[in-house]
Image 1 (spheres, rainbow, N blue to C red):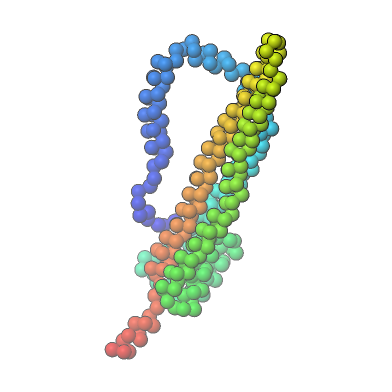
Image 2: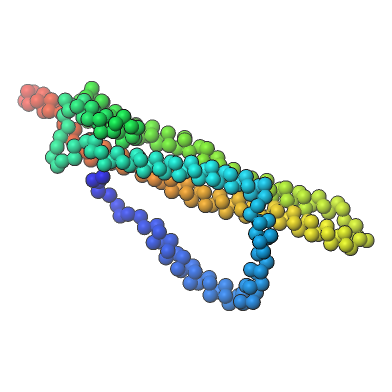
Length: 275
């Protein structure tokens, strides 16, 4: 892909590393000062295998895992499609030699060459160039071709956004399922208070243990759901960014190798005759 970027490349990962170094360098010493080693050890002793299993396993948690994996597989497939679409930039769909021009008479031969290069495989870039060449062969006007490229880019962008609907739904469904578990746990814990018997201390002790377990279910579901949602939203952002950059790069490719090379000598001939 022989395109020159119009701005410096983003270095998000470098800023992430710098943020980790700064935040870690400040908070870790403060954490060690506020929490001695003995209290930290006691804290980690509470996380027994049974406690971890109770945190990670449950009907709501399993529902969250299902939505997370389902959405993750769809995102992976979309990212693979972006990589496949980018293969079109290496197929030499248009002449890239310095100083080359595209006449209206060249539009249809280039269109047939494009079909041969893509092998009838669906490429966003190929579709955009195909429609632009067809328009140039008919209208012989470069501004009309530019309008076709812009319209097709908007159509492809709209298609990508619309097809992301199910993934967006699953992304928001995960915390919703977690909140269902929260409501279930709170409702179960509060309902047990109806069985309070001030005269029976043993029964009250068991009752408080049951209420604590129910509250644990409530907060465990919320924690797992929100954690999965944050991770999934990050991958959703990455895929959306990759798709948007694909459309932008297709427009830039058409701008450099198609729109700027269109040439129709007829207007010059007509102007010379009028003179």
